[in-house]
Image (tube, rainbow, N blue to C red):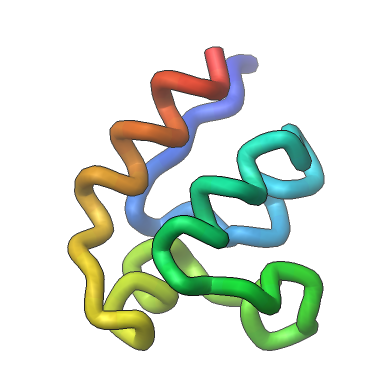
Length: 66
């Protein structure tokens, strides 16, 4: 089964699958990707907290995680 990123994907699960995408989260202003709260958030939740649109983040993650 392929790993698929959606707005409902948990950030911790994404980082566990491919830690090289951490820079994408840093780019959205999420500098504490290792803290327990952020690792349990969905992309949509984290984007809302950081005041960014989740759609470009999902698109960038999908492009990097093939």
